[in-house]
Length: 330
Ligand SMILES: [Zn+2]
Image (cartoon, rainbow, N blue to C red; front, side):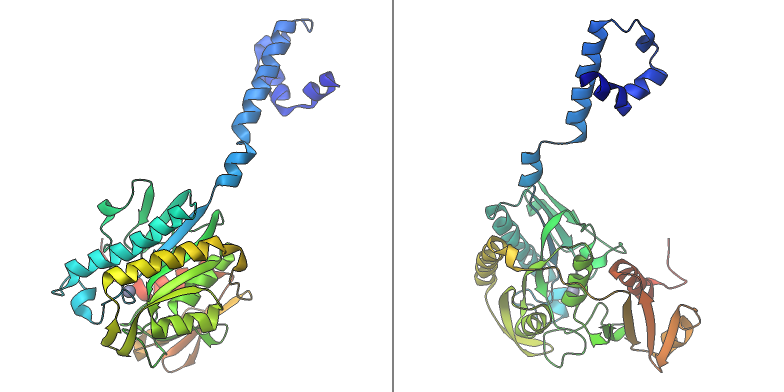
């Protein structure tokens, strides 16, 4: 009955407590109509129409640079390099190819993370005005910062192979300066697998990856049969036979359109929890001093072990190891 519904409604109970006007005579039908109108308004505000929710299709694009077509050395990868300005444009173009493809596939919201070096490589003024860009470091979630469970799919552009892979242009994992090996639950991982596991904790599947042939082979071996584009064939750590930037962008566009069209085939990549991180430093002293922490176990001369509740804790811990230095300023 309507009267019972009104009496049990929290909105009406609140009004009864705080609203002086409710103490008017019960027979005030005008007041009852006002209450019903208020209820209707609040119901609309609390729950957006089902159609609007169903249409939401968010895509997260994480962009690195070593796997971009043409990149082979620090000449392209670092602001000091003579080709950097041109290649940050090529990196941006590959990201834009993925953005256009996501839009064509029906994406309603796109976040792009600049996940190489200083995190300030992408030319943000070239992106459509409804795209948001994650920039600079440190940031919780690292190369996946800003991702949450509301995203439908994750895409990796410009990725490279891991530090333990004997092949691949500029192969490394997170930090070529600090880390010699990074393993999760006993298996050495590439950045793509680490980031896929992070997305997996939010229930978000990785549907597409691009990079050199060594990176693509490693990613497919670990993450399964996802759509990929090989931007170049590695001939060594500092050499490759590469697609042109335009050809690479074309293939990335087509690959991402296809990947998002059948994204339902892909499942989140979820590691068993808690997650064990084994990390080998390039130097001896970091392993010694970090193992002073009771939460850290030293497993050999250069390696430590840390067990995290989930991938959020693991990525934060890796960031601490990569970033902490008592001279950090400001
Ligand atoms: Zn990079």
